[in-house]
Structures are given as C-alpha cells and as structure tokens.
Length: 52
Image 1 (cartoon, one colour):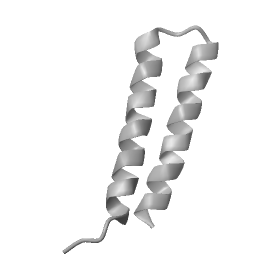
Image 2 (cartoon, helix red, strand yellow):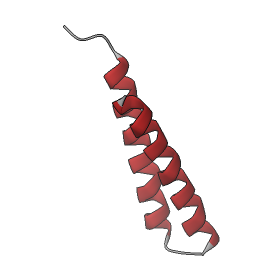
Image 3 (cartoon, helix red, strand yellow):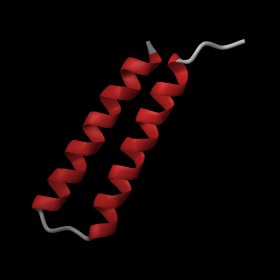
C-alpha cells in the first residue's frame, strides 16, 4: 500500500519539477523536486523487498 502512495507522490513531484521549469523558476527548485521524486521511488522499491 505504501509503495503505491510513494509512487504517486513521485509522479506529483516530477510534475511539480516540470511545472517550475516552465515557469522559469530557479534550477535548484527543479533539482530538489527531482531528487525528492527519486528518493520516493527508491523508498517505494525498498518497501517491496522481502523482509526478515
């Protein structure tokens, strides 16, 4: 369940990064959104791994 929510959050963050890019906002804001999206996808992947 959490992995689905984190994947959706990553999609929203990528959309936010693209939106800020079209608005000509500072590059560090876009990079921050993309980094957070990557972290969200990584967390979603790690939650799907079998635990002990």
